[in-house]
Image 1 (cartoon, rainbow, N blue to C red):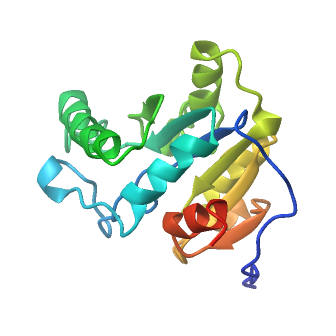
Image 2 (image 1 turned 135 degrees about the horizontal axis):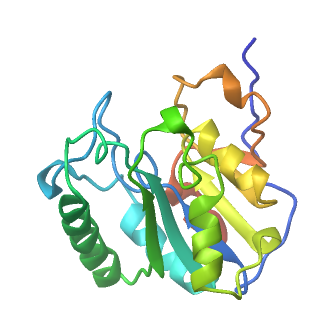
Image 3 (image 1 turned 180 degrees about the vertical axis):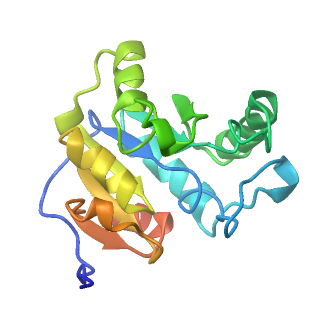
Length: 194
């Protein structure tokens, strides 16, 4: 049975001491159906994302991208290919007034349930090791899949589900977002009071 999540804003307040965790594919850039972004030529920012990143830079103490990238283990692209994609992505984000403190990724498939792969907490724990001032109870996770929401829920974060991705596995039935939005730009408009 499908549960409908109402479009609403969570009833919580946060300030510039909070941390923002963002998924990448389907949140920052267009997701390729049944495929991976293997080169910069395939990377397309979603509408309003670059402007949104500028707003987030003013509203969050720390901003991280946490992304599962199993295409590396599958041999579809390399660590170097992913580094090149992220370097070019960052150039655009910075040019538009945005900021990302660090990008964490998991190169493994889910079959062995690696700690780094969302919904497991490995990437957040790595961020906490690198930036000890992070408090997960004062963090927000924005993602387009229930595994992203489960990742945030498992760490005590506030969570926001983006879009209407429907190919979710029933294993994430306990993943409950605080709210649902259509796009990252929606959240930025809310922060700007629009």
